[in-house]
Image (cartoon, rainbow, N blue to C red; front, top):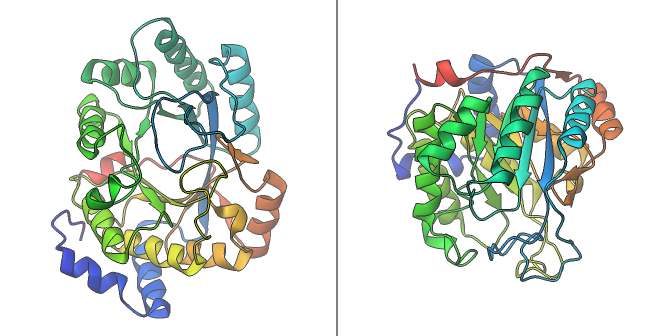
Length: 325
């Protein structure tokens, strides 16, 4: 049964289940709602890189940090279309465009992004954008242009959030998600583990996501990629089994959502990724770069799919209607 009334104690009990049993239970739930061998390939492109005024402690695109990421202007439309076409040819069914903005500002640049959305949508790709905070009116314009999903991660628990970000509040993030839902787009929202948060923070983070009604249709689970020059640049790499446990819990709580094994895959062995898929992950980001951080290349992923007997989803999943049942 799809629930949005999970109690925190219930989630803690799921999270604390012995891992081998938790993965088994999550796989059973996964098989009720998804093809266990099918994985969606998505491509994420930074259409405007660097120079962000925010202070997110994990992000190499923040202007205040010295990470070697140079600010670049908004990409030209033909270049974006070429990248989207190449992504489709390599098996991606979803194309996400990200801009290092604190918030969307009306004007020429936003109009150019709307043109990008229309052009990528015309290629038959599921379009996702992540552009920072949006107003109700801006969200409506994005939906009208053809945006299927808007990504805006809540990142972590509300109590830990202020230790990572000071230039945008937790409530700001929730308000953007409200605007996205009201406009009729699907919600893509997850977070990052390995930033120094406690298990209690992870429980609170998952509780918040599972309390959305309907659930976010897409839930990306990221492992922190420490970047030198950021405040979190010296964090130790997370134990891969913590990724498995978090993904399995997310699958148990949000059965119909697409759970995305996102940043940090380059540090995961094929065996660790296999456990993530068994735990309920059914999407990855393909290509050798996620915005500005490294990612396994297409050939590496193709080899993994063959070794594990996975198959690429030929059609983008549409959990929107199902999530409203």
